[in-house]
Length: 283
Image (cartoon, rainbow, N blue to C red; front, side, top):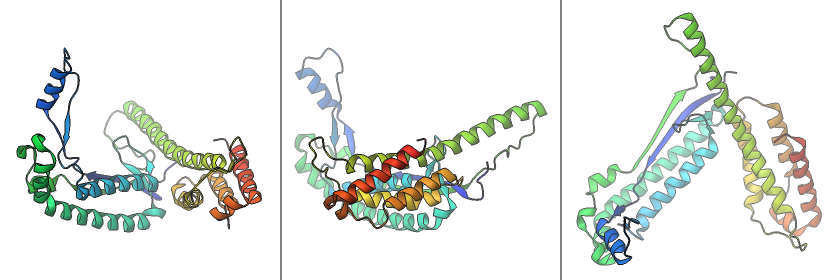
């Protein structure tokens, strides 16, 4: 099956700096104090411990990576992901905004960097070593936010000048690889749906003593967001996946988290529908 006209490949690379440094002197001191007979461990200093400016960048980078994984499907072991064209415009628009925010946080950190180093001279005491800190230009280069897009390959499109028998063998391996990656991508769609259904069923069940389990509003909102996302992530147009998606969407239609908390009947009705979906499809 070829999906070259309904998807493309995307590669997102985000670089950050953890500001950690191995202190061999302290590591040796600890080994000596503990009377170890070998190198038993390493001590890594946090060069900018507590620096909110750096924490903000690293936290945002982690959130963007998680968001990127949610919007795409696995394709290559190197980190290249499959992006459905139906999700492309929204993805690009949101990513552009995230790139601008990342750049703003980076500029703020680089501007504050000399001041942060000075404060660390007091905070770290005898652990402080000015030589541990790169200069501003070097630090700025540690932070980057790059995005590349590539066309989806055609199924069976393997062009190489070799003998017919060898070409046939190579094409067969390529086709198998292509189908495997496509199946893995779709398996993730089913996996996300299955995890969401299981989580809903578990949280909507009562405790062993009959008490209601606590859950956040995100229990419902995350499930509805997944339903919306699966309309584009279903790149092979799997009818069973679409049927399961629609069943979950109907089960949660007009249901508010407050209703689930306060009404035994609503909670029981939704859980019953969710369990029916779990039993209906071969997850």
